[in-house]
Length: 378
Image (cartoon, rainbow, N blue to C red; front, top):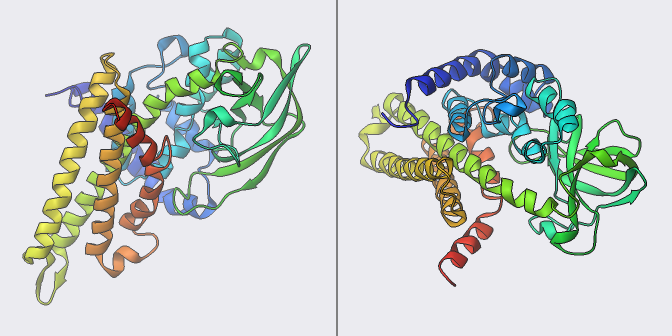
């Protein structure tokens, strides 16, 4: 037994798998067609206590990062998708900054209702001219008495279409990282507009939007932490976001492997099962090797992080290891499924589409390699 395999986490995983098979998977094709996950699904997940996992007890939460990833892995293992995880658990990137800042009013107005499934929050950082370069954001928030006046735009914002509020990166000071702050902006504030809902290659059930702010008046009390600390706050949460994406990528690869093993063991070609062909067996063997390496390494890095031994370079390695494994395994899964794998609506086809964003979100593969290179002294 290890920390991922305790009786409590086995029960949690089984509960989540049952919920996924009963409430999520049957509706996933419809949600992908609609381009969003209905709000009532958040309420159902909250009633099971799933939304609170990974947040401190002071915020109404429970469990730790291993519990959080146990939930995600169980969803994926039961036939869910990373797009579904992105939509249902978008609060995992929207709330941590507010929780760390610890403002009682913000906790009551935003954190607790979101963990209860009553509100949906979103993190708004990326802009048309500033993606990974967070220090270059141009959206401004000028303090005028007891409020900020916000002007600018955001793009590629996960859950931006459904969100009741966004935690937005804004420029309250001069150029560079020290001028960046975080500000909570309610969706119903005059001047705040969802410019358009974006269509994507994958993550079809996770709504993504462009946002516009034109003279949006935001109370000064909605500032998260102190002015000028936004960049640091964002960087602090990148580690958990990257570990989450690494674990989800590895879990998706495991699911693709399981689906492929079932397929080649039952599908016949030229009078014999696909698994009787050496080329097929060797493909599956390599898929299994990469899944095992990615899972083992990601779990070890997560365990180290949970124990307080954070290492940015190893986290970057874990993310890229899992992403590269998923790229390979999902590609081979579709190939071995043949024409069925190419059909929209089959599960391996969904994982193949969704896999593409994993090497982009939370920091691209190239940025991860730059972090690793710096660790190597290059």
